[in-house]
Amino acid sequence: MNLEDSKIGIPINRIIAQSPLFLYIVLSVLIVAVVIQVHLLWDKVLSPLAIRVEEIRGYSALERSAILHIGDEFVPYLNFLRDTIPPGGRVILPPHSTRHSFTNFGFAAYFLMPRELLNCGNDEVEACILRMTGHNSYIPVLSDFPPSEIASQVKRFVPFQDDLGVWVPK
Amino acid sequence: MVAVILDIAVTLGFATTGYLCARLLLKEASWLDILSLAFPLGSGLMTWFFFLFGWIGISFDRLQVIVIWLGVNLVFAVLIWSKHNNFAIRKPAVIQRRPSLAGPDFVALSILGASLIISIVLSIGRSYSIYDAIAMWAPKGYGIALERSLWGAHWGNHGFAYPLNIQFIIASFRLFSGDILPGSKITFPLFFFSMLLGIYSFWVKKRVNSFVRAISILVLATVPTLFSFSMIGYANLPMVTCLVLAILWGIEGMEERDSSRQVLSGILLGITVWTIIEGMLYVAVVIPVMFIARYVSRAGQVKPIAWITPVVVIGGAWFVFYRLHGSAGSQAMSAASKMWQAFLQGNFRLPELRMILGYARRNIFEISTWGFIYPFGILFSILGWKKLRPGNDFVAFALLISTAATAVLSLGLFYLRSFDIPGFYYLLQRGFPRGFMSPTILFFILGIQLLTSFQIRHKDKGI
Image 1 (cartoon, chains in turn red, brown):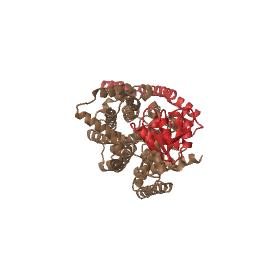
Image 2: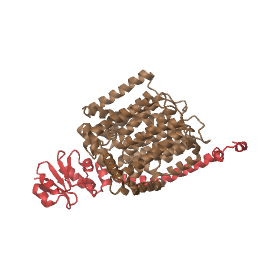
Image 3: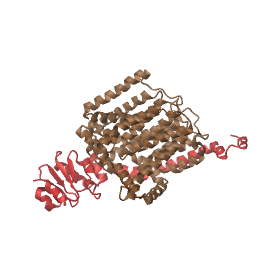
Image 4: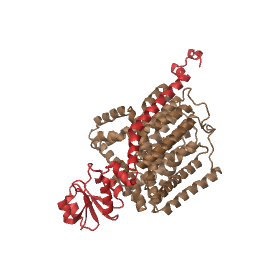
């Protein structure tokens, strides 16, 4: 590029763009962007995640999932459920609610497979529980489900801790 | 340790199929091309074959899976030998030398390699710990492995309403290693870095200045949303990977009037459909848009049969399955039906539409979400606006209208969901980043393409 070019009508933005200075400016801006993005990525994503992953390193894949999504306190209860309910058992879950992820049967399936899972319907909790008279159905306690006065008619309670536990066949 | 070895073997098994397919189709390719295509292409094709064989009743046992894998690869090997007489692949003329150890390419690719390792470690370390990954992708994969059958995908949410690429990948890891790490989570970083390598290779072939492309790929790799999605176990980024690679190979194939690269693009579009249900919609807009780009620009050539047939075969097989077994559980069909009913009653939900557009306008400039992608994209588009005119530069124009079409579709999908989802603003906040990855990435590729109109076009011969 020389001065003559500008006289024959090359647009000024092209003249600027063809100078080495333009390349250096573009590269400098891109480098600054990378530095800022790396800082943000580290600060907001990688560092907190790396610290958390390091803390839970000794746990199994399933336990790490539970810790990160539901909380550390859920893991012993999850292990209790997996130990108490046999792999061929049928697990009765509360009606689906957004308040607790575990009421979603797809979500609970990840943790309790190969156990079969069923949700009680919203309008038929009592009837649903009273139907569970078989020797293969189990009702884990989740929040206020199942109502103990109803569950006790068809199941026997195996406590875990606090109010948690699982209703097993009598 | 045994699980690690088995997980690596499964990964290499998929990648081998991808290499053979790429070798069959491409007369020449760089090692970057091969690395970028191997896993997305191989896993997509193999899982599609597992699905087909499963559909006709063949069980998903280790022996059957190995036999199917051997059979598919043997067919590819025979075809390669009969077509090329050679398994090694030739480098393109534009790529004649290896990167120098001190060169920007080597530095950028080394940083990408280190980032891939970080992403893999954290992806596996966090296991499946985000809702959709736990409730849908992982249990479906584990269900297939548990029941040794395609029909095991009834586990998890949404029945058979979603395509099964990711689920069969997860199932393969579960089948061979038990997925105790879980090794299947290597899948998501591999898709992300495959896309980055594919974009990098595209820039090399377009002779973008080596410093510019090296730093630009790091800009893309460090976008917080993209890096996060490489670790969480959602299928969005794998779908975006296939779509972006398909568009880039399609552009190249049309520009060079090369039917083989258009077939490759068609296969990748088919795998896009096969990966996530939205993929079908993205493909449905990208295909006409690319036709328009070619005819408006009057450049290159589209070979419609070569390009479209793989999409129809791969995507069509799943679509038939979906119509038979999946549409009952589909959220999209339910939302579309509700939207139609609302339209008939004259309810166009304009406040929600304004909400979506306003949210998008604010979100794309959030540095902690998209980094500097949009400021750069806009700046480079202003500088290179002349290349955006139809007829000036087919590549830039094709990228421009692909970006626009995918952006409109992404926004349209949110509008569709506004008819179906209570608490829509929460969905918008939660779902916008994952729904807007395709246009974002394409826009940045466009920006860098526009820079090549200036003197920063690369003078060396690539890597």
